[in-house]
Image 1 (tube, rainbow, N blue to C red):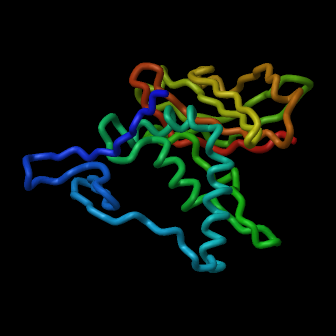
Image 2 (cartoon, one colour):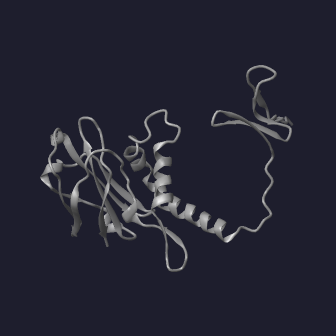
Length: 220
């Protein structure tokens, strides 16, 4: 019988007087925000969680429930706020936005995400105005207004259609923003589990700059 011994090791940095990363005995070393941290093993808390702690956990769960499936949209939609090399990534910024700005409490005291407050895209371009969406059979129809500005001949419409925690449709640069209307076949209309929440935004097809998204409405 061959028995393999697993050893937990730490990595010494900058010589014998430097910091280490890893575990030595019951002590852990790591780097956090550029600082060397040494701590003992954390012990499970035996304290009963307070109502505020329970509410905060429920808020985190509600925000995660809404955001997890939309991660590809957030990577695209928040990239201007989190360029490569940023300390906080695009997805983390989107999750923070949902947690801090989009949560509400229902009549039973449970937190939920208000889809009308969510921004799936962030950017400096002007967003579309007076947006509307409606369903006819298995097709979604969109209308909006957009005021032409210098260089806007390369602006296109982005669309997100979201069935919360089930599925989503993500369309990039689908239509010239100045046309003011668009239609698309949407399979989600056939197998959706709940209301479809619809968002629109603008992208410059040349520079890839974005606008903030606009909540268009819900298709029941």
